[in-house]
Amino acid sequence: QVQLIESGGGLVQAGGSLRLSCAASGRTFSNYAMGWFRQAPGKEREFVAGISYSGRTTADADSVKGRFTIARDNAKNTVYLQMNSLKPEDTAVYYCAAGGFALPTTTATMYDYWGQGTQVTVSS
Image (cartoon, rainbow, N blue to C red; front, side, top):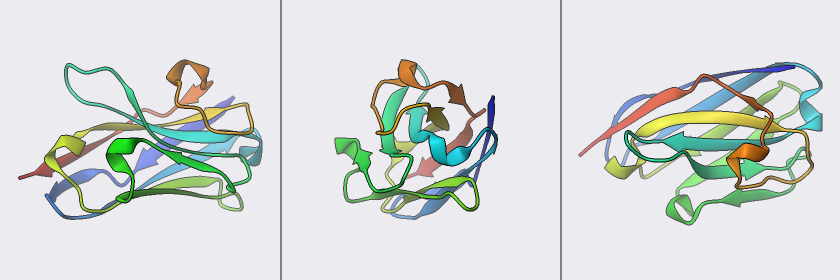
């Protein structure tokens, strides 16, 4: 089992920044690829960014390219999502997820463990 706890969400004005953190406990964190997903009201959960177990490979959704950056610190069992130039359409509950594979995937059902989510609200 892997337990994931997200933090860092909140209310921010358009153009602002937030950094989300996801702390993992349980099994060896460095064995898991990690992903960030988000879900807005009335919409399906969508992939935001992912990172390989080593941290060497990342993937971003087109909607966040150039604005969001995913990173991980295996020594701290934590994955981060730095979000800059936030837009109102980024408003959603953000979830981190862990998958027992090497490279990140955009498919939510592939991930084995999920956090409870953290709310991000961007005002215009």
